[in-house]
Amino acid sequence: MTLETLTMRIRKWRQYRASVRELSRLSDRELSDLGIGRGDIDYVARGGVRD
Image (tube, rainbow, N blue to C red; front, side):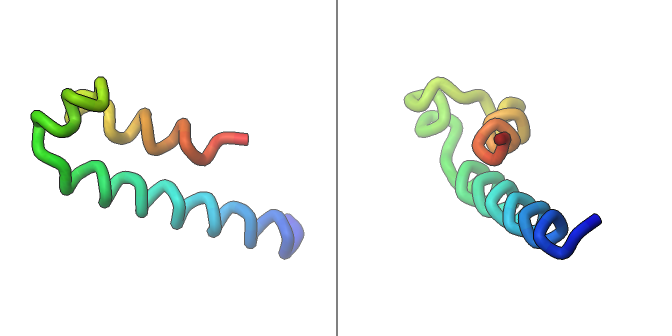
């Protein structure tokens, strides 16, 4: 694994964690307004960092 690949993975992991943190702070109603269920947070956050 090259340093560039490792750096990219770390950056994506941080983006994922930030998305999970932000979405988790929202109320169920706010999530519903966005069309997201609480159980979908992980899926949505992972989709945000895909290539």
